[in-house]
Structures are given as C-alpha cells and as structure tokens.
Amino acid sequence: MKQTPLILSIIALAAVAALGIIQLTSNGSGKSAGAGEAIEANAQPGSIVWFDLDRVTNEYDMANDLRTVVETKVQSISDEVTRRGNKLQSDYNKFQSDLDKGLLVRSVAEQRGQKLQEQQNSFNNYAAQKQQEIAEEQQVMMNQIADAINTFIQKFTEENKYAMVISTQGGILSVPVAAASADLDVTDAIIAGLNAEYVKSKGKTPAAETAPAAEEKAE
Image (tube, rainbow, N blue to C red; front, side, top):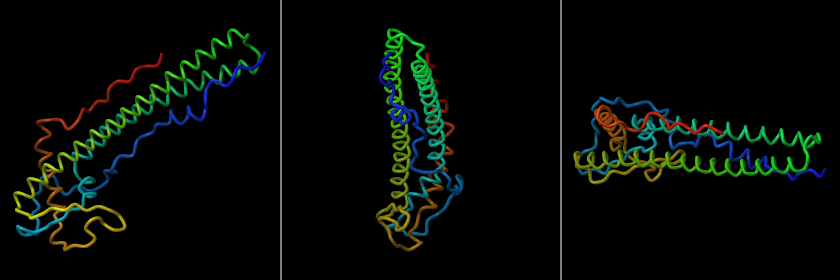
C-alpha cells in the first residue's frame, strides 16, 4: 500500500507548541526603596529633575505584583498548549508507526489521516488564540504600570513645583540623560512615593485578578 503523505509538520508543530513565557519588560529583581518611607528629593522648586525609569519599573511593587500574576497566567497557558501539542505528536507517531508496519488498510489510513489533519488545524488555531491572549495580558499589564507611574509623576511634579521631570533609561549610555547632577535625581523619591500609594490602594482595589482562568480540557 502506498504510504499516506506526511500529515503533520513536525517543525511547525514544535514551534507552535513551545510558546514559553514571554519575557516581560522587567525582571522584577530590584530592591524596594521602602514603601512607607518618605524620601525627599534634594532638587529645589523650578528645577529640571530626572529619574531612572528602569529602576522605577524594577522597584515599583505594583509592577512586580502585576508581573507575577501575568507570568503565572502565561505559564498555565504555555503548559496547556505544550500538553496538547505533545498529545497530537504522540497520536501522529502511532499513526505513522501503524502505517510503516502495514497494519492499516487504505480506507482506515485515510480516515485516521484526515482526522489527524483536522486535529492539527484545531490545535494550530488554539495555539494562535492563546498566543494572542498572552500578548493582550502583557499589553494590559504594561498599560496599567505606565498609567500609574504617569499619574504619580504628574502629581509629584506639581507638588514639588519642578519645571520639568525627565525619565532616563539605558545600559551602556543612559538616554536621554547621559550625565546630570545627583542632586537632580529624584528616582528614590518617586519609587518611595509610588510604593506608599500602592500600599494604601491595595486594600481598596486589587491590582489584577489573582487566579488565572481555567483552561479547557482536551477532548
């Protein structure tokens, strides 16, 4: 009997199944500047001050909490996609083995091959949907963090009567502030203020859902 054409693209299957965890903007490994501490900036009213955005996103407790929630959800999604992909691969391996051994008549082989093709299409659609969910989770998280920081910076600038607040970030050479007086660095004050506000708000409104949605079970 002529062997049925390859039903599954193994390379494509592995690429779709291995969603993994999307790397989020920060690793969340920074040290907190003290959520309840009031840290005053040295800069005088009317100054143009700056802050390290990388440090703020690393040491902002709300950002780290949101990252943890999103990473948990993403891991759950990735595990389920991988499980379904492995099951589909196992089914194909069994089908191919039966073909190689001549254990299937043509009609049965065609039926099983068609069913596997349908399962692969369904799996690819499912994996694409979950990849989109991961992207949306990440985007919403980043929007929440950005909105909270921006809202605080606006109030911080007004209360301290600064002429301008500039954010800087970067590794080899910070951009856009390559060099500036340490007295104009308000990073610690911003981190402390953000964390203090977050501590106060946690008892009122949860930062994000804490339980990932249950995944559908494979048939």
